[in-house]
Length: 331
Image (cartoon, rainbow, N blue to C red; front, side, top):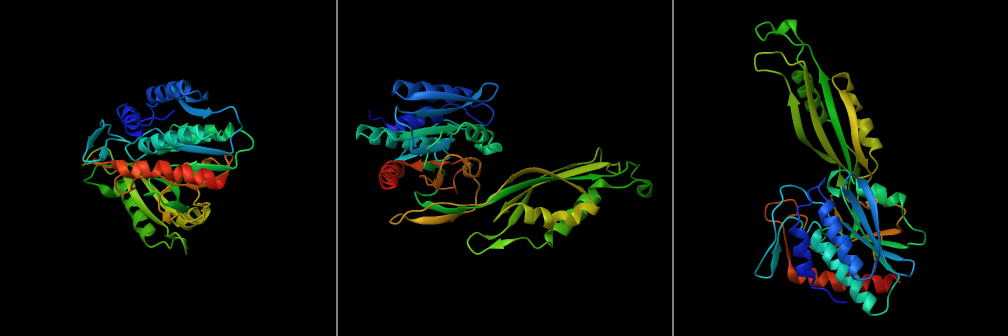
Protein backbone atom coordinates (compact mmCIF):
# COMPACT_ATOMS: atom_id res chain seq x y z
CA UNK A 1 0.00 0.00 0.00
CA UNK A 2 1.37 3.43 -0.89
CA UNK A 3 0.98 6.25 1.61
CA UNK A 4 1.16 10.02 1.34
CA UNK A 5 4.30 10.67 3.42
CA UNK A 6 3.66 14.40 3.78
CA UNK A 7 0.10 13.92 5.00
CA UNK A 8 1.27 11.15 7.33
CA UNK A 9 4.09 13.33 8.68
CA UNK A 10 1.64 16.17 9.29
CA UNK A 11 -0.71 13.85 11.18
CA UNK A 12 2.16 12.95 13.50
CA UNK A 13 3.50 16.49 13.81
CA UNK A 14 0.05 17.77 14.81
CA UNK A 15 0.11 15.56 17.92
CA UNK A 16 2.02 17.00 20.87
CA UNK A 17 4.59 14.33 21.75
CA UNK A 18 6.99 16.38 23.84
CA UNK A 19 9.19 13.89 25.71
CA UNK A 20 7.10 12.36 28.50
CA UNK A 21 3.85 12.86 26.55
CA UNK A 22 4.30 10.35 23.73
CA UNK A 23 1.30 8.14 24.50
CA UNK A 24 -1.11 9.63 21.97
CA UNK A 25 1.28 9.65 19.01
CA UNK A 26 2.42 6.10 19.82
CA UNK A 27 -1.20 4.93 19.84
CA UNK A 28 -1.95 6.62 16.51
CA UNK A 29 1.20 5.16 14.97
CA UNK A 30 0.50 1.69 16.33
CA UNK A 31 -3.04 1.74 14.95
CA UNK A 32 -1.94 3.03 11.55
CA UNK A 33 0.74 0.35 11.11
CA UNK A 34 -1.65 -2.35 12.30
CA UNK A 35 -4.11 -1.28 9.60
CA UNK A 36 -1.31 -1.64 7.04
CA UNK A 37 -0.94 -5.28 8.09
CA UNK A 38 2.09 -5.19 10.37
CA UNK A 39 2.37 -7.32 13.48
CA UNK A 40 2.63 -4.76 16.29
CA UNK A 41 4.42 -5.02 19.61
CA UNK A 42 3.92 -2.14 22.02
CA UNK A 43 6.94 -2.02 24.33
CA UNK A 44 6.05 -0.26 27.61
CA UNK A 45 8.55 2.45 28.61
CA UNK A 46 6.73 4.13 31.49
CA UNK A 47 3.13 4.84 32.43
CA UNK A 48 1.25 5.80 29.27
CA UNK A 49 4.38 5.67 27.08
CA UNK A 50 5.51 2.87 24.78
CA UNK A 51 7.67 2.07 21.77
CA UNK A 52 6.13 0.68 18.60
CA UNK A 53 7.78 -2.32 16.92
CA UNK A 54 6.19 -3.40 13.62
CA UNK A 55 7.23 -6.47 11.68
CA UNK A 56 6.01 -8.68 8.85
CA UNK A 57 5.74 -12.46 8.72
CA UNK A 58 9.42 -12.93 7.81
CA UNK A 59 12.06 -12.46 10.54
CA UNK A 60 13.63 -9.05 9.83
CA UNK A 61 17.17 -8.61 8.59
CA UNK A 62 16.99 -4.81 8.34
CA UNK A 63 15.11 -2.54 10.75
CA UNK A 64 14.24 1.11 10.19
CA UNK A 65 14.24 3.11 13.40
CA UNK A 66 13.80 6.63 14.72
CA UNK A 67 12.05 8.43 17.59
CA UNK A 68 8.68 10.12 17.85
CA UNK A 69 9.26 12.32 20.88
CA UNK A 70 10.13 15.99 20.39
CA UNK A 71 11.67 18.85 22.31
CA UNK A 72 9.40 21.65 23.56
CA UNK A 73 7.60 23.81 22.71
CA UNK A 74 5.02 22.05 20.59
CA UNK A 75 3.66 23.79 17.51
CA UNK A 76 1.58 22.22 14.71
CA UNK A 77 2.42 21.61 11.08
CA UNK A 78 2.05 23.83 8.04
CA UNK A 79 3.22 23.47 4.44
CA UNK A 80 4.48 26.46 2.51
CA UNK A 81 6.29 26.56 -0.82
CA UNK A 82 7.22 22.89 -0.81
CA UNK A 83 8.51 23.02 2.78
CA UNK A 84 6.99 21.23 5.77
CA UNK A 85 7.15 23.16 9.06
CA UNK A 86 6.28 22.05 12.59
CA UNK A 87 7.81 20.54 15.69
CA UNK A 88 9.27 17.21 14.61
CA UNK A 89 9.27 18.05 10.89
CA UNK A 90 12.89 16.90 10.62
CA UNK A 91 13.50 15.58 14.14
CA UNK A 92 12.12 13.12 13.56
CA UNK A 93 8.50 12.67 12.41
CA UNK A 94 9.25 13.54 8.79
CA UNK A 95 11.99 10.93 8.90
CA UNK A 96 9.56 8.41 10.41
CA UNK A 97 7.10 9.03 7.58
CA UNK A 98 9.84 8.52 5.00
CA UNK A 99 10.84 5.23 6.62
CA UNK A 100 7.28 3.92 6.63
CA UNK A 101 6.85 4.94 2.98
CA UNK A 102 10.11 3.21 2.06
CA UNK A 103 9.09 0.07 3.92
CA UNK A 104 5.75 0.02 2.12
CA UNK A 105 7.43 0.45 -1.28
CA UNK A 106 9.86 -2.37 -0.54
CA UNK A 107 7.02 -4.55 0.69
CA UNK A 108 5.02 -3.89 -2.49
CA UNK A 109 8.05 -5.12 -4.44
CA UNK A 110 8.07 -8.37 -2.45
CA UNK A 111 10.69 -7.55 0.22
CA UNK A 112 9.47 -8.75 3.63
CA UNK A 113 12.75 -8.97 5.57
CA UNK A 114 12.21 -5.49 7.00
CA UNK A 115 10.73 -4.10 10.21
CA UNK A 116 10.11 -0.75 11.90
CA UNK A 117 11.13 0.32 15.41
CA UNK A 118 9.90 3.70 16.65
CA UNK A 119 10.82 4.75 20.16
CA UNK A 120 9.97 7.24 22.86
CA UNK A 121 12.36 9.32 24.92
CA UNK A 122 15.30 9.97 22.60
CA UNK A 123 15.46 13.65 23.50
CA UNK A 124 15.85 13.06 27.24
CA UNK A 125 18.12 10.11 27.92
CA UNK A 126 16.96 7.46 25.41
CA UNK A 127 14.79 5.51 27.85
CA UNK A 128 12.78 4.09 24.95
CA UNK A 129 15.90 2.81 23.21
CA UNK A 130 17.06 1.14 26.41
CA UNK A 131 13.77 -0.74 26.65
CA UNK A 132 13.92 -1.69 22.96
CA UNK A 133 17.42 -3.08 23.33
CA UNK A 134 16.21 -5.50 25.97
CA UNK A 135 13.60 -6.84 23.53
CA UNK A 136 15.69 -7.08 20.35
CA UNK A 137 14.83 -10.08 18.17
CA UNK A 138 17.50 -12.47 16.96
CA UNK A 139 18.89 -12.26 13.46
CA UNK A 140 18.70 -8.51 12.71
CA UNK A 141 21.73 -7.62 10.59
CA UNK A 142 21.36 -3.87 10.10
CA UNK A 143 19.68 -0.99 11.91
CA UNK A 144 18.95 2.09 9.76
CA UNK A 145 18.50 4.84 12.32
CA UNK A 146 16.97 8.12 11.22
CA UNK A 147 18.21 11.53 12.35
CA UNK A 148 18.66 14.76 10.36
CA UNK A 149 21.82 14.17 8.29
CA UNK A 150 20.88 15.95 5.05
CA UNK A 151 20.50 12.44 3.58
CA UNK A 152 24.18 11.70 4.16
CA UNK A 153 25.37 8.51 5.88
CA UNK A 154 26.82 9.25 9.30
CA UNK A 155 30.38 7.96 9.57
CA UNK A 156 30.56 8.84 13.26
CA UNK A 157 28.68 10.74 15.97
CA UNK A 158 29.85 12.29 19.19
CA UNK A 159 28.85 10.95 22.56
CA UNK A 160 27.45 12.86 25.49
CA UNK A 161 28.48 13.12 29.13
CA UNK A 162 26.11 15.03 31.38
CA UNK A 163 27.21 15.98 34.87
CA UNK A 164 25.95 18.11 37.77
CA UNK A 165 28.37 20.00 39.96
CA UNK A 166 27.19 20.49 43.55
CA UNK A 167 28.78 23.04 45.86
CA UNK A 168 28.06 23.24 49.60
CA UNK A 169 28.54 26.36 51.70
CA UNK A 170 27.39 27.90 54.96
CA UNK A 171 24.74 30.60 55.16
CA UNK A 172 25.49 33.91 56.86
CA UNK A 173 24.30 37.50 56.81
CA UNK A 174 25.87 39.21 53.82
CA UNK A 175 27.18 42.04 56.03
CA UNK A 176 29.44 39.46 57.70
CA UNK A 177 30.55 37.25 54.80
CA UNK A 178 33.49 35.95 56.85
CA UNK A 179 30.99 34.09 59.03
CA UNK A 180 29.72 32.09 56.07
CA UNK A 181 31.08 30.09 53.17
CA UNK A 182 29.79 30.87 49.68
CA UNK A 183 28.73 27.85 47.64
CA UNK A 184 28.34 30.10 44.61
CA UNK A 185 31.96 31.23 44.88
CA UNK A 186 33.08 27.59 45.02
CA UNK A 187 31.00 26.74 41.97
CA UNK A 188 32.33 29.70 40.00
CA UNK A 189 35.88 28.74 40.92
CA UNK A 190 35.25 25.18 39.72
CA UNK A 191 33.83 26.42 36.43
CA UNK A 192 36.88 28.64 35.91
CA UNK A 193 39.19 25.68 36.57
CA UNK A 194 37.30 23.64 33.99
CA UNK A 195 38.00 26.29 31.35
CA UNK A 196 41.67 25.38 31.54
CA UNK A 197 41.28 21.59 31.57
CA UNK A 198 42.62 19.77 28.51
CA UNK A 199 39.89 17.56 27.07
CA UNK A 200 40.28 14.59 24.69
CA UNK A 201 40.37 15.03 20.93
CA UNK A 202 40.00 12.67 17.97
CA UNK A 203 41.22 12.89 14.35
CA UNK A 204 37.72 12.29 12.97
CA UNK A 205 35.44 13.97 15.51
CA UNK A 206 37.68 16.80 16.72
CA UNK A 207 38.02 18.12 20.26
CA UNK A 208 35.62 17.49 23.13
CA UNK A 209 33.64 20.60 23.98
CA UNK A 210 31.03 21.41 26.61
CA UNK A 211 28.33 23.87 27.58
CA UNK A 212 27.15 25.03 30.99
CA UNK A 213 23.42 24.65 30.52
CA UNK A 214 22.01 25.34 33.97
CA UNK A 215 23.16 27.19 37.09
CA UNK A 216 21.21 27.37 40.34
CA UNK A 217 22.14 28.60 43.80
CA UNK A 218 21.57 30.78 46.80
CA UNK A 219 18.52 31.68 48.84
CA UNK A 220 18.43 35.50 48.81
CA UNK A 221 20.58 38.43 47.60
CA UNK A 222 21.60 39.32 51.16
CA UNK A 223 22.54 35.80 52.27
CA UNK A 224 25.86 34.06 51.73
CA UNK A 225 24.83 31.12 49.55
CA UNK A 226 24.70 27.73 51.32
CA UNK A 227 24.26 25.72 48.12
CA UNK A 228 24.76 25.98 44.37
CA UNK A 229 24.81 23.66 41.37
CA UNK A 230 25.48 23.65 37.65
CA UNK A 231 24.65 21.16 34.93
CA UNK A 232 27.15 20.63 32.12
CA UNK A 233 26.96 18.69 28.86
CA UNK A 234 30.20 17.44 27.31
CA UNK A 235 30.07 16.37 23.64
CA UNK A 236 32.60 13.57 23.76
CA UNK A 237 34.73 12.04 21.02
CA UNK A 238 35.30 8.65 22.66
CA UNK A 239 34.22 7.09 25.92
CA UNK A 240 33.26 9.32 28.82
CA UNK A 241 35.95 7.84 31.07
CA UNK A 242 38.69 10.18 29.83
CA UNK A 243 36.51 13.24 30.43
CA UNK A 244 35.51 12.05 33.89
CA UNK A 245 39.19 11.67 34.72
CA UNK A 246 39.99 15.14 33.35
CA UNK A 247 37.31 16.91 35.41
CA UNK A 248 38.33 15.10 38.60
CA UNK A 249 40.48 18.17 39.34
CA UNK A 250 37.45 20.20 40.48
CA UNK A 251 36.40 17.76 43.19
CA UNK A 252 38.26 19.73 45.84
CA UNK A 253 35.69 22.48 45.26
CA UNK A 254 32.52 20.64 44.27
CA UNK A 255 31.07 17.15 44.09
CA UNK A 256 30.46 15.69 40.64
CA UNK A 257 27.25 13.77 39.92
CA UNK A 258 27.31 11.74 36.71
CA UNK A 259 23.87 11.91 35.07
CA UNK A 260 24.28 10.41 31.59
CA UNK A 261 27.13 8.86 29.63
CA UNK A 262 26.63 7.80 25.99
CA UNK A 263 29.80 6.99 24.02
CA UNK A 264 30.80 8.28 20.61
CA UNK A 265 30.04 5.81 17.81
CA UNK A 266 31.56 4.85 14.47
CA UNK A 267 28.98 3.60 12.00
CA UNK A 268 28.75 1.51 8.87
CA UNK A 269 28.86 3.29 5.50
CA UNK A 270 28.43 2.00 1.97
CA UNK A 271 30.11 2.95 -1.32
CA UNK A 272 28.18 5.31 -3.54
CA UNK A 273 26.57 7.26 -0.69
CA UNK A 274 27.72 10.64 0.61
CA UNK A 275 29.00 10.52 4.19
CA UNK A 276 29.64 13.02 6.99
CA UNK A 277 30.58 13.21 10.67
CA UNK A 278 28.00 14.60 13.10
CA UNK A 279 28.56 16.26 16.49
CA UNK A 280 25.32 15.14 18.11
CA UNK A 281 24.24 11.98 19.96
CA UNK A 282 21.55 9.51 18.88
CA UNK A 283 19.81 6.37 20.12
CA UNK A 284 22.33 4.22 18.20
CA UNK A 285 24.70 3.59 21.15
CA UNK A 286 21.74 2.24 23.15
CA UNK A 287 20.53 -0.11 20.39
CA UNK A 288 23.55 -2.41 20.29
CA UNK A 289 21.50 -5.61 19.85
CA UNK A 290 19.75 -4.43 16.67
CA UNK A 291 22.52 -5.12 14.18
CA UNK A 292 25.18 -2.99 12.52
CA UNK A 293 24.12 0.68 12.74
CA UNK A 294 23.63 3.00 9.78
CA UNK A 295 22.63 6.62 10.42
CA UNK A 296 20.84 8.66 7.77
CA UNK A 297 17.81 10.88 7.34
CA UNK A 298 16.46 13.97 5.61
CA UNK A 299 16.65 17.44 7.12
CA UNK A 300 19.30 19.57 8.78
CA UNK A 301 20.32 19.41 12.42
CA UNK A 302 20.80 23.19 12.18
CA UNK A 303 17.02 23.74 12.20
CA UNK A 304 16.10 20.89 14.55
CA UNK A 305 15.04 22.16 18.01
CA UNK A 306 14.45 25.68 16.61
CA UNK A 307 11.25 27.69 16.23
CA UNK A 308 11.53 27.31 12.45
CA UNK A 309 12.11 23.55 12.30
CA UNK A 310 11.36 22.41 8.76
CA UNK A 311 11.96 19.82 6.07
CA UNK A 312 11.79 20.30 2.29
CA UNK A 313 9.24 17.95 0.74
CA UNK A 314 11.69 17.12 -2.06
CA UNK A 315 14.26 16.04 0.52
CA UNK A 316 11.69 13.85 2.28
CA UNK A 317 10.85 12.22 -1.06
CA UNK A 318 14.55 11.72 -1.84
CA UNK A 319 14.97 10.04 1.55
CA UNK A 320 12.32 7.45 0.66
CA UNK A 321 14.29 6.42 -2.42
CA UNK A 322 17.55 6.53 -0.43
CA UNK A 323 16.15 4.20 2.22
CA UNK A 324 14.94 1.80 -0.45
CA UNK A 325 18.35 1.79 -2.17
CA UNK A 326 20.12 1.15 1.14
CA UNK A 327 17.96 -1.85 1.95
CA UNK A 328 18.39 -3.36 -1.50
CA UNK A 329 22.17 -2.97 -1.27
CA UNK A 330 22.33 -4.33 2.30
CA UNK A 331 20.24 -7.39 1.43
